[in-house]
Image (cartoon, rainbow, N blue to C red):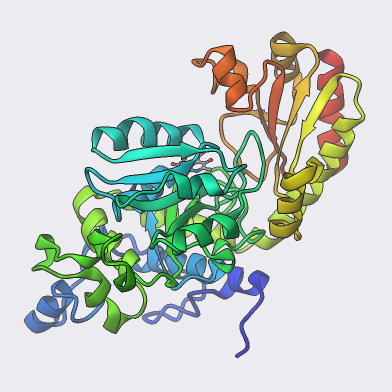
Length: 428
Ligand code: PLP
């Protein structure tokens, strides 16, 4: 069959029917363990001579369907579902970098990732070197012999400047360094593997699940990075692993396909640290993905309409949306987001912090929440909430001015969305 379109993969990827019951919907395999066929079968499963179910901390048939579907949507070879996007970010780096190593990351990150990188990974001995993504060459300049990965978000908020994926991936590949992309805000809109990224991660909590009801994360292996060719720069993949009888992952995984990175993450980090997704959450996220293509189309259309509306309002001094940039940022929007610019936007109220607070309090349809990527419209005023611990200079450095409001535009009727914004602006 010719390769399918994303709308079709979202419904069919990774699953046809349940092999035991022929059920069409993916069943929730709410089980901890799996009966082995024989002593030999058990030994083969533990020794990775056969792949199969052992224990739900490490694999589960419901999560397996989710993993296969997201891998297919991203154009990767295999995926690993995890308890949260945070777990996916952490494991995606820990899979390559060990104490004494470093990674180079974009400064434009979700706050939770920023904390993970600047505190927890630092405590574990992994240094994160932050560089401004406006200058792709900065990644190369920050690299040394102990750099194990580059890390960035496709469409980071609040700045919403698209990351130059191909430009940075090429710099890394020349030195044996894979680019890990957090594609949470742009599923289906950008496929980072098409631009040279080696690993993709998602907070499935957001648009993938899409209904604000389950926390989950995924890491996807592009299968497009030659770990053996960069033995010096990638020791975690190329030196014997004492926790698996000295397996060298870049070699040991070869009979199973180009899945060394994701296999190692599953059978070492997930096994040892344990951030497993519950089968129920995997089911809910799969259910969400079935309508992802439809939802993304509506999120993009509504967000652009809201941006155009807000740009005309006298209370608003600036609208931040990927379609509104000039210069190089506009070039990157055209290059990476030709099929829609996502559901996020920001705007600045001329009245500053007080106007921001009044606006948020007056909203009736929009929810006031810290989340993004729900089918419902969501809003937050970062200066008085998510960024309130930072001083004003640091807030400005992260792109948050006193009057900045972030919207995650939902799929309600556009007239209702605009009516709510209009009455809240008037109240502010
Ligand atoms: N990456 C991005 C871009 C996010 O927005 C978030 C959460 O807001 C995360 C990662 C972390 O995901 P989770 O909340 O599922 O742990």
